[in-house]
Length: 108
Image (cartoon, rainbow, N blue to C red):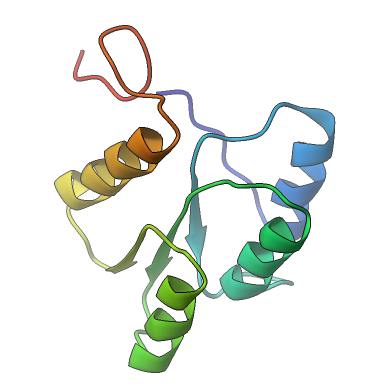
């Protein structure tokens, strides 16, 4: 998997303007600037169908409900296992048709 990290939601959204769309995004609920839910809403309004996985250290059932209702693939509470994250990434890639013998998530 190719991974890129961004310091903020705004930086991520700006990067999408200059490069191909991401196949999946892992977004923290609480970040500097825009919240994860605001990033998700901006993606939705722009017509970008990028699967979103949320992570958080400050769990609130109401926030999880909003995220999932808005189309998130999953919601992980920190600390979470590598397997849980990779499983959700695989699920996100499957929704985009990106997994298979030569594409997407692999165990190399």
